[in-house]
Length: 83
Image: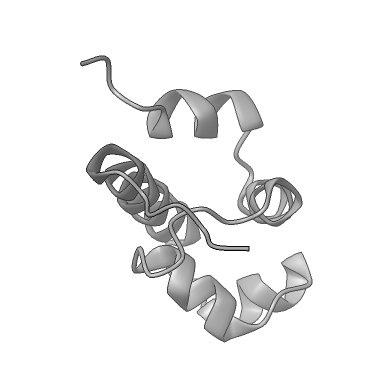
C-alpha cells in the first residue's frame, strides 16, 4: 500500500507537536521521558524534530501522560489551522 504524501499543513501540525513536547519535557532527558512512555529515545527524537509528524494516537497519549499534558491541550495546540 502506498502512503499518501503529507500536506504542508500536516507537516506543520507535526512540527507544532514536536515543539510542544520539547517544551513540556523541559530539563528531562529524551531517554528518561521515552522510557517512562514506553518508547525508544529515537522515536521521541523523530517526533520532536518533526521527522515523524503523524505518530500513533497511543504514542501521543503516552507522551502526554508522562509530560502532564491533557489530550485536549495537545489537540488544541497542534490542530490544523483553518485555511
